[in-house]
Length: 302
Image (tube, rainbow, N blue to C red; front, side, top):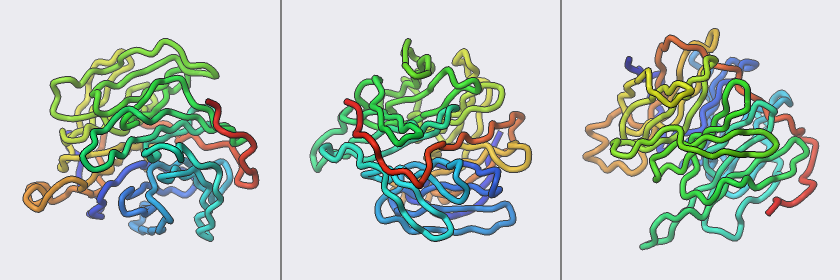
């Protein structure tokens, strides 16, 4: 099975793609270009510049608003006006930035951070995973340190959370609810030529993981066995999302980051937005239930 290029947008680091059924639109980010993108099925595209790098996106129950995971903070964003309403700074004392994020089935935003080492330093697991509640309370989740948070997704019933620290090449999962228990390995990619990046879950409970460096998106059954491979004609796919009519299309972002001129010559579609016809359907994207009219009520929980 092979994905086809939909838009040659040349994203430096395309990521965070979500489908909005209300707007019939895809939203995603080019992280390093600090730009929010939108694509509608009639071919219309739109871009919004951001004040800093934008790492992840969530839909909101409030019409016309998105929840943004910017490099240093969480914020609400109004699409019509461009208004940004800050919620909370995250890990201001650490050399990290926000990275992957997704809403759980209860409408809470779960996200992680990424260590940005200085010159000559190696990447270390200095980041964490967090959960933003509807009352804008920020909770640190007991999932250990992370160097590059990724693959955050939830089972259809909402009682399983998937996540990873990409350099470890392992996708983990845990029993998920108000408390998180029984962390274990879901998939081990040790020996593979790719690292696990962003994920989404289909209506049948399969986890679709974009594999950076391997040029593919792989579907894993709930038991961790792989059953579907989507070849992406770009070396660095980053995240997939179901969308379109009946949630029957798989859309995939990709990146050009880290590729020199020679590599880009061999990878001309790097940074494009792709789509694939797959024999599965997605689930409606959960929406963050907090209101943009609120303000942060409590600091992060240690």
